[in-house]
Each structure stands twice: as C-alpha cells, then as structure tokens.
Length: 151
Image: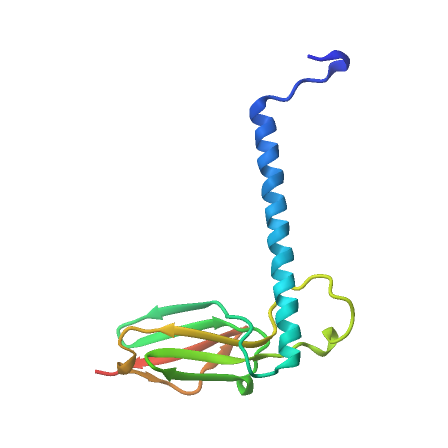
C-alpha cells in the first residue's frame, strides 16, 4: 500500500484497462468513419440521383425444397422504389430510400441509417431454374422475395 491508503494497480488490471480504452477508441473511430461515408454518399446521392448505388442492404437467404426466400432489411423503402430482377445468374435488388423531410435541413449529429440508391447482388446457384414470384412482400421493414424452384 502506498501512503494515504491507495493500492497499486496490478499489471493485469492496467493492461485490461488500456485494451478496454483502445477498444472504445476503435469503436468511436469506426462510428466516425461510417458517419463520414454516409454523409459523403448522401451528398453524392443529392448530386446524382439514381445513377450510383451508395449502400448495400443486409440479406438472408433461406432455402426449402420448393423455394428460395430472400429477405432484405429495407425499412422505409416503398414498393414503387424497389426493383428486383435476374441479371447474368444474379438476383439484383435495387432501389432508393429517400431522406425523410424532417432530415432535409439541420445539422448532422449522428448518421447511421443509409439513404439514397442501394443495390444488392446475390449470386444464386441454379439461378436459371428459379422463377421470381410477384409481388415481393413487405413486412415490418423487411422485403421478402420468393423464388420458386422449377424442375
């Protein structure tokens, strides 16, 4: 013990705290980078609407005996702003998530939700034997695409 009742920190505790702080700084840097990239993409989106995809939505693919289900997280995208097609063995999902009117002005404080043009390409095995079912369904921010297997 040091004078005044203070205990010395063990080397392990010091190392742990240092790595914990380093991890926090890395996470903060990643958030800043993501925010910058989204802001840059939005600026580009405003300058060239509809010409370049800015972001890629996350997707899940589930296969059953008869069907391939593709589920994309696309909250805020309406059916009229979504296109689904096959292109050279890939399922291509493109569209646009518009910036809400409430966000058109003001100072950017935090930017994690991507807006603007998006595109997702999924290379599917046996795509030539899949038939796209229309229409895709929208459910709680998810777009669900049904692809029927043809024999």
